[in-house]
Image 1 (cartoon, chains in turn red, green):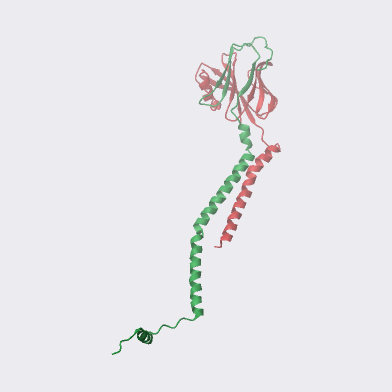
Image 2 (tube, one colour; image 1 turned 180 degrees about the vertical axis):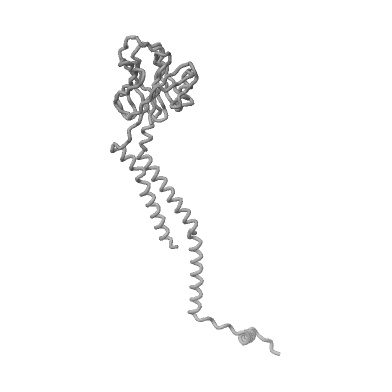
Length: 153
Length: 133
């Protein structure tokens, strides 16, 4: 085969590969610049922890290892779960608790835990997938301790 | 008897062993040119890359160029996922607005996550003014 024919063929293959690969790198950046990035989804779960019993809600399977590693409770029960896109809002939980989400910047926000309208804890957090943020313990009337678990998806 | 001298010997040798007829000049040069062409072809063959060597060099060059291209694109356009994931999430500030005994900030070792443990929250305490940490 003529050496120039082979060179031209290889150059065409290389050029084609570059043309195919270029959109894979440029489109995500363009989508981000154009505001096309999907909002971060947040799950807020209210967990009632106690030292009586030894039960764990199956819905908490992803965070119970962390809770068991850092806390000394034996029972973790899911009281309620809320899912919402990250943005300024009031999220109503069970047991008279509400979450106030404000000052949202990218994946950071200010979270205020309120009980009966009174602020208990306010904190500035950075949310990222696979890294839950847990805040508690808020004493409940039945003797259990309440924890708010925030996870990003 | 006459002793032959050198002239007699030369004469006798010329008659017995005649010198061959020299070839025509055209034939001589044709053969010389043919030998020269063969020699030049052999030298060119030794100097030229074989097909396998050329393919190897070209493949390595193309791979290096492609790698540099992808590397430059990755460097110029970081994926947005990486920017979102960023460093590990952290509680950057904390403000407990009611009476309490203490605050523990716990990071999981085996399991990723941050636990803010506020102990002794008093339900009936007066609200504490907001502070900046």
